[in-house]
Length: 250
Image (tube, rainbow, N blue to C red):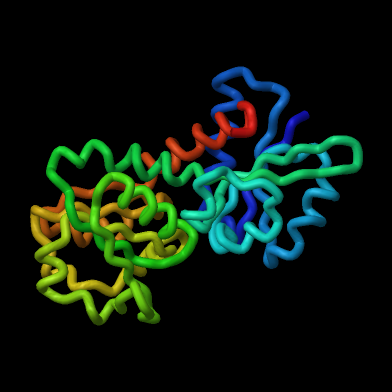
């Protein structure tokens, strides 16, 4: 039995196990399983692989997309530029073990945003600076968009939420939430931005997919914004993960 799964903490919000379990049933894949592996410290990752010798592929979610890099032996060429990994391919030979790192978020982001490029997107605001944000920034810049990063703690190249003013909003075409705000079970939370400044010219994209319609997206929809839910990205990056696990390394 080939084992796959998801590491992160907590994992109560994740739909990955449901997605892959249904995929295996639908496609008559009987030699594979997918499970959640909640780890409260990334330092327990090596023990996880030792205790589960049948694991040959893992997805990585909050909060370890950057931290996992210290356990990756071989990185896909683009990983150094992104600085985050969300797919691991585990290769074992005798007693030796090698961990290969990839990022399928870039595929999910590109597939989600590409249909909206016809609207002439130029400027993007990315809320959050974690592992998912790194993939979003990399992907949008590769599509030709100018990116502004927002965090609770401003620093060179990153503004604060208080810096999101009328001028910035008026010049922005798409706003992407890469934070866990609004994620189950805290479904009532949302990023602290000026929703009253939004209108029909804006596109809101939330990487949170559980629930599908977050408070962030609802607030935008009420003001006429086009919205992109996180489910499209989830499905796209999941299928890319499956391709990585079943293809030559690079």
